[in-house]
Image 1 (cartoon, rainbow, N blue to C red):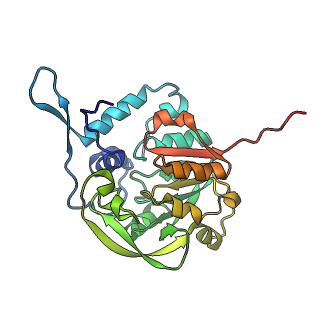
Image 2 (image 1 turned 90 degrees about the vertical axis):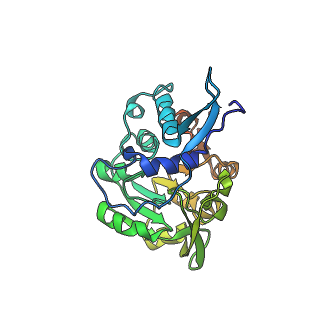
Image 3 (image 1 turned 30 degrees about the vertical axis):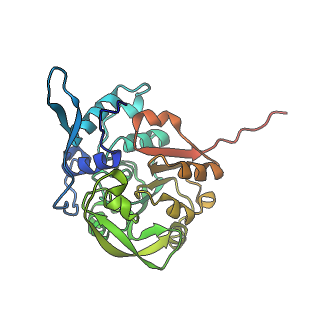
Length: 291
């Protein structure tokens, strides 16, 4: 990447796409919480235009649209991955469908689930493939939309971490998609910006405690979209017992990768060309040793 070109962080791109792209949503309207009243500037300065003195400008939405066009011609884009996604923000929905090959009747856990349909990674599974599951978010405003749009799932308003039954501060960001238990993520400092945040007192839960309370014995898909708070959430999850077949985690954290390696999981490298935002992990296949 040229040092003269300033590209907006992917998390901010994702937040802006939620604000304005109709393609984030379901084809039929679903109830969603109101959008925030303010957001970061949508213009980003780039390199100078050829033959001119003024710098080119492009919106974050245009940058995301261009990225999607690039991904359409990525090598190996066949089968499910060649389809057009319906609900997820990027191609998460297609990748998850490809991994499970549209298997029916699974069980998901969606941490940091937000809206029930728009920009959601598990809505396709429930609506079209008869999956059931649990959605969890620290913002209570998503509870009603989930109860109306996701009849086969349960929504819980918790901050998922490594312990239960305490009350802690969660930071609601001015920008959609950046709310976090980490203030530097929610207020944009982590990405070089400054956003307003609202402090919300939220009850904590360890994922294992919640799953035990709900009588869950097996998780097929675990999705984590919690803005830098992955490790506390994973420390409260007995991955060896629930053994998810696929884990989707936002970001490319080395600490998170090391955690999965320690528990016998490996990243799925073939999906990197289709998703620049998330990492995908599966159990390492144990091969029999031939004498």
